[in-house]
Image (cartoon, rainbow, N blue to C red; front, side, top):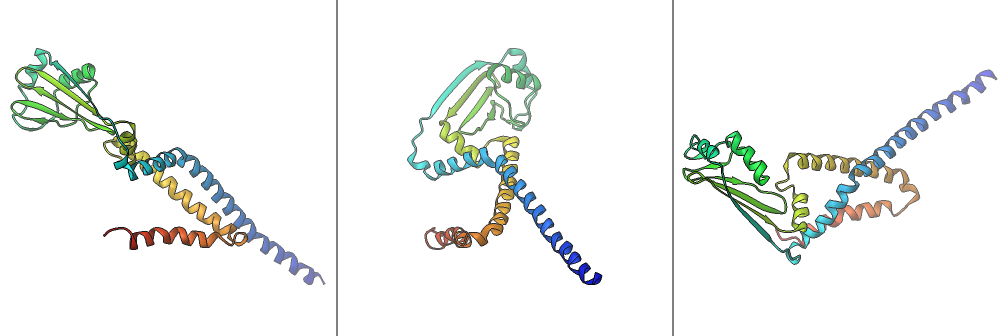
Length: 220
């Protein structure tokens, strides 16, 4: 009789362990899902909007604004350029780079292009372009900035064009968070699919639709 009573007691304990393990995993997946959704929220909103603006870039007009500034490099700094190379790429002397930053707000590239006539600084930026030249004979500095509007700016953010290392790192982190969000969401779909018969047909449709569009409607 005692042995008979002991058997169901052990079986019940054994049966409870998988349920406890499953519930713990499920709770962890839910935590990953909502945390990753919080991390992704602002980035996904930005990349969703810019996905639309990029897709319709040809139909969105933008007014280009060009601003040019001309000034002169102080004579002592001009003399330091004489020690530079006749051609090739080399960093600006520290004093010249500091003067450009203080006077024009220009951060000189690591290695601008030198010729025997001038130093050319390429200064690309999201949503536009910029460049500067320093005449090595008379010290005339020309700085030109082109802006193509905020839509061009956010489109370049989407592409990571001329946005720097910090933004590139943000895109990588956002992509990783989106991956966690997607995988955890798929697990949650599987958990609740039994009560929602339309789950897997919708998932299959979402997977097949881009494949069919590429196969039949995208020009190779």
